[in-house]
Length: 137
Image (cartoon, rainbow, N blue to C red):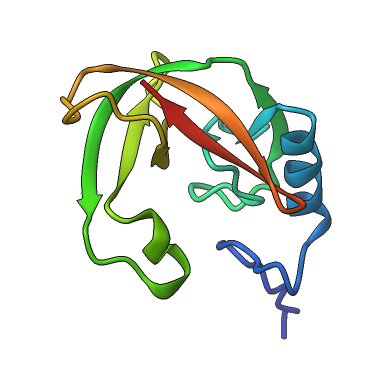
């Protein structure tokens, strides 16, 4: 009988940070957004995944150098969970980079209603010992 190796294809919580996720978080601290790339089939994932969804090969972390995107889709959240109620309403947007990779983040400085196709710029936010990424218009 063959041995089974369990592979986790999702994301860890802060209670169980894997070495792969730790590298991603450390790069965020340095103002770098990392994507993952499969060395076997060259598939790219953003946010990064430790294992390729196509062939289950372990991916490598590579810096995503694109910083400008276009608004692909968005939702305005009027009824937020308790943790974000002070920020409502807020905009969650999917930005598409010229490479085709897409990233979901909040638009934190809306200058009016969002429009699909409008330019977005990636930025980083340092708050309470935590670094996240966001979209600026």
